[in-house]
Length: 80
Image (cartoon, rainbow, N blue to C red; front, side):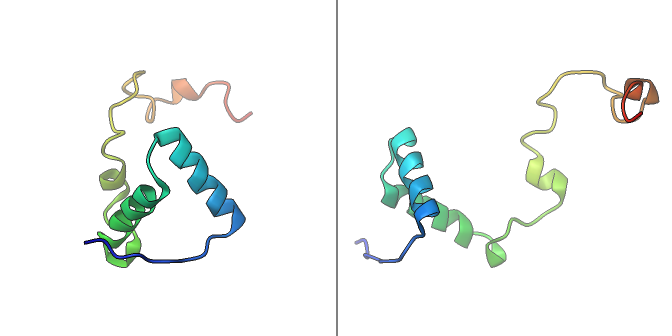
């Protein structure tokens, strides 16, 4: 059984919720439920872990020189 909860949104948040609902095809209730599930599934509502833990799905998703962060030759022309 689902419980009904009422709350107020400011105009900006309401506009974003409506836009996401239209774009995704999900109801506003579905989006709010999913957001609450994510928020309440972690301590203090904040993601836990290192930067690498939080971005692990992005690691290795780009192509380029393997030594981009350590080879100063790649920095020629930047900063001056």
